[in-house]
Image (cartoon, rainbow, N blue to C red; front, side):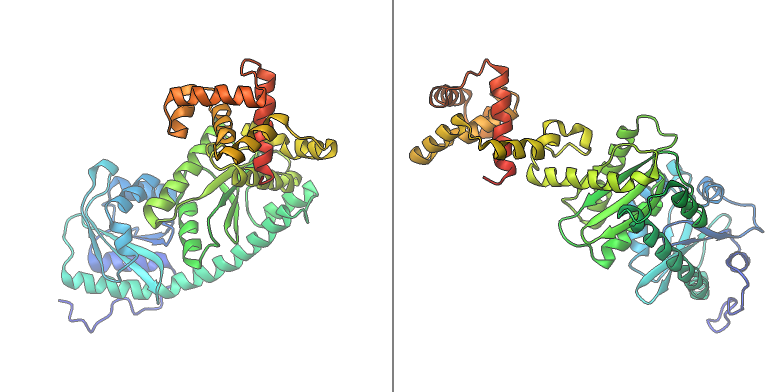
Length: 412
C-alpha cells in the first residue's frame, strides 16, 4: 500500500519513454504522455492493452481531432486546464475512448502537457491518484527541456516568416534553402491567411490560438505569426481538392472554436489566391491586407467575402476613385438626392443604396429598410423623379451603385 512518503518516480529518467513505462508499471495500466497541444511525446511499451483512441494517437503521433473536440464538449480539457488534480474520463464508445484518468503537468500557472492512464482491467484508486500527481511532477522537468528547445526553434521560424512577408527574402532558391534548414516541408502551392481581431491579442489569447493551430488536422500550416491584432498563416495548398472551399471551411471552423471555447468574437478572416512561387509571399500578404481594408470599409456588403477574386467591383475602387478625382466628377443624381434628404430630413440616398445592394429586389430591400413594399415603391418613384433615374437602365444602375460605394469608401 502506498503510504504517501515513497516516491517511485524520484529517479533520473533518461527519457520520457522511460518515465511512461515506469508510470505504467506502478499503476498497472497503459500510459501516454502528451504536450499541451496533444502531440504524443511518449507511451508505455510493455503493455499491449489499449483502445482505438490510444492506437490512433500512437500511429498519428497526436490525438485525433475528433477525440480532442469531444473532450472539449464533455468538459474534460477545460477541467484539465483549471486543476492540478487527476480527472476521471468515462468511456466514449463513439470515438473509441475507454475509461481513463488524466492529469495535467504544470509549471506554476502554465500547463505543459498531460498524462493519460487507461483503466483496462482495474479502476485507479485514491492512492493511485496521489502517485499520478507525483508522476506529473516528475515529468515537469523533461517537458521544460523540450519547451526550451521548442521556443528557440519557434524564434527561428518567426524570423524567417517575417523576412518572407516583408520581402527581405525574394530569391526562390534561397527561400527553399531556408525551408530545408528549418526542416519545414516547402509545399509546391500555398495560400496566405490573415485573421483580424478587434483588439491586440493578449499572451493568453496567443496561447489559445497556438493550441487551435497545432491541434488542427484539416490544413497543413507551414508558418504562423501574430502582429498586434492579426494572426497570419502560411498554409499548404497541396493535395487539396476545391482549395477555396477547404480554406473557407477552415476559417469558419477556427472562428467558431475561438468563440465557443474562448469567447472571442468579431474575427475578420481573409485569404490570398493560390501561389506557387515563394518569392510572391509579399504580394500575397499585400493582397490579404487590401481585402481587409475593403472589408473594414464595407463590413455588411463583404461579410461573406474572404478573397480578392470575389471582391468584384471593389477590386477597382482605388482606380475608380482616382479617376473621379482627376475628372472632378460629381454624380448629378446623388447630389440632387442628398440635397433633398437634407432639406426634407428624408433618406432617399440610403433607400437607393439598399435597393441597389439588394440587386433591386423589392422584398429584400423593404425588409432591410424595415418598411412596407408599397412604401419602398413610393420612395423609388420619388428617387426616379428627383434624381432623373431610369431603373430599367442597367448601365445607370451600375454607375449609381459604384458612385454610392465610392462615397462610402471616401467616408462621405
